[in-house]
Length: 183
Image 1 (cartoon, rainbow, N blue to C red):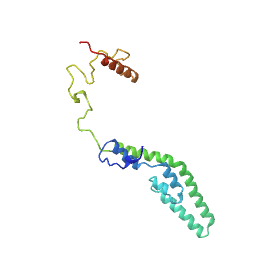
Image 2 (spheres, rainbow, N blue to C red):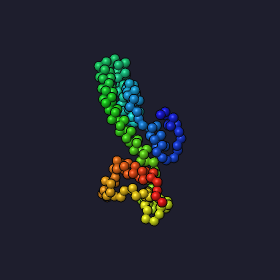
Image 3 (cartoon, one colour):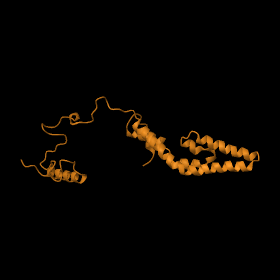
Image 4 (cartoon, one colour):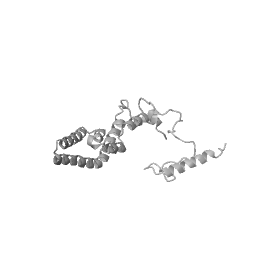
């Protein structure tokens, strides 16, 4: 599947709109590691939303250059070595940082949509469904003697039927509907 869906404008709510917002905001590991190649500038830290990291890299790298130009080779080398060690540390740090950032972004996008249920909302109940059933019938009732009741055909009243049991019961209902009705 292509990435054309990202250009769709589904303004408003819904899962598709949330996924589009999410896809545009998530941080990618390959981008962070590519920016790590420019570690003296600290761009990988800026990409990962660090506040002090980019400035620390830029300041330390500038200090090393200034010290080298002024002829202080040993302090310049020591400062450059610290910058390189910090970059090696960041090579291991990036993965965990991206995981934390993306988790926070997901939480913000999916939980922060501002959609709240109306006051007094209890969820869907049978009373909310259209009343197209006869007296004594519940929602989803089937006119067939093959319809199992709790306690029969492996269904216990304490639990809902398993997926396999549901599939078997649906097959029985389909067979019962396919048989000609005696008049």
